Amino acid sequence: MPAPGSEIPSSEPVDFVTAISRARVPPGRARAMRAYRPSVSETEFKKRFPLSYRVQAVTIYEAARQGWATDRSYWQFIGPFRYVSPKWGPIDIPKGFYTDFASVPPSLHSIIDDDSPIILFPSAPHDFLFTKRDEDGTRGWISKTKQLTLTEVNRVLTEAMSFCGANFLTRELVFNAVELANEGIRHEFAP
Figure (cartoon, rainbow, N blue to C red):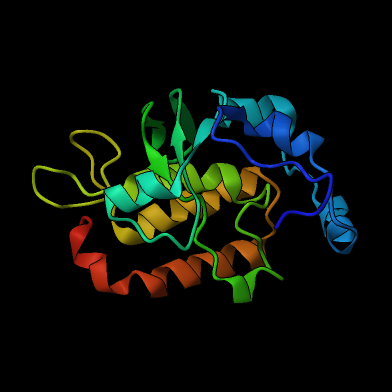
């Protein structure tokens, strides 16, 4: 049961930048939240993430209909989103794309929370590149003609994290975790 006076999440569209800026931070997390500092100017950030991050919550019923695990939250983009990588170019996430943001195990939340500002935006292009193509079941497609390796897809994540304030140690920890966790599907990406 929610605490008295707490806000009940809705499935209405939400602009996450606005929502996060208005969120009340629990006292135990206040120090960690104050420690977050963007690593680039706002102009540079908007160059890398030029479109609004607009998503809508997916109900547990819709998740079950999709055949997804119901132990996490899912979100659907209600508008297009884009990450512009200095190395790989634009990665366009279409309106209607579903994401679960970062799938950070609860045991690692003391290091990085799954809705932390340093991984929230970067998780969208990473999830998109993990999506299987209907034609052949492969992953890592940045365009119709360019497929990335699993390692490159995971570097897209950590590169984007670098623009969101993640330090080198955190980025490398995340990189090694996603490399290890996805070793079994490496063959679905470019060789």
